[in-house]
Image 1 (spheres, rainbow, N blue to C red):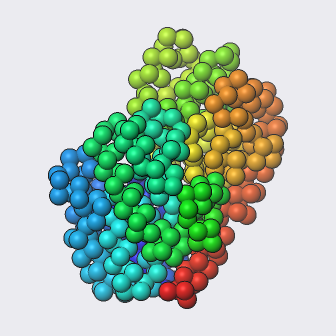
Image 2: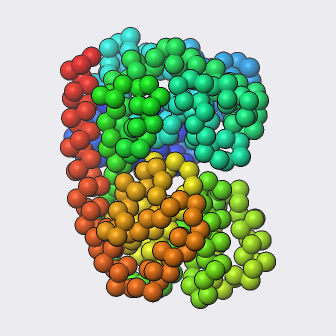
Image 3: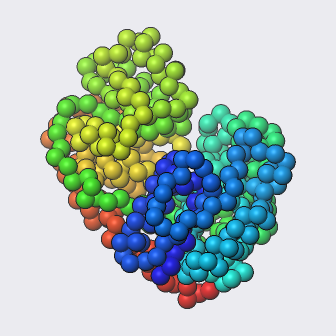
Length: 405
């Protein structure tokens, strides 16, 4: 099978890009021919496969012409037509394509009767701000069912009226054109929670298939240790709940927390640590590469995912479980689909700092319990989140889509 993989970024920027490249490796291993369609950028990685690029659009410095391209890009459609005619794919599998690539690339595939599959890494189909967070980083569902004026009123996109208007227009255009309901054959949702949100927004249920993300579990078959610390991996931002985590740890006496990552709350976190004299308890590791993350993971007692927003299917959880460590996770969105309370970790009521503190204390005081949950976590990861398990599901979707177009 010939598969054209589409994503607006062609370098490791986040979870969507990790999936994009890992899926390409998996499909290649299974004997399929792969090509990529993305934006030009100096950070782009070389894959050794056919790569098709459109001009980069920077939404922060875009001109009026580029603003219109966000809705529909004739130039990108032309580039997609060239890619389709050259590579001749059986399937076009799009990931994050909105705004920089635009719906025009999907139209190009539709006109040639090439089925389009879409993996919903976020909820941009529902929310112009992509995250279902308003400008104050609070959960917001007011734009569901096309009520996009709320985005403009609350200036949800980077607290900008102009950008929020543009996002609302794009959302309206996609809804009028029925992009998700008609132009895309199947939507893959990495969590059941996101699937339900898409259904609530009016997308036909039988078009959406839930498949949790996958990882190469063999790469996480490491010798584990326990150096008696908790670990947080992720963006240092309000919605990730890292401030709640620090608050919970400030109430503990001698326990250690390592924080890996960077983000807008870094200076505030540093200030809290200093003001509360927590330097001996909380260590900021900064940005870590994949090998460094694995090293900290294998030595941690457990990992905490304290999010207070709608997480989808975090790789941080899958990676932790594949290594054989338990997760304490907030009971919100896709997290409890991965973290089964008292099976492979613990869950708590999201945004409840007191309960979070209790769960942290429990695993610090019960090393054997943490080991039990960690062992079960790896068993589940091998069974449910392996490459082969994912491939067996996605190839059926590809085959069905080809028959239906």
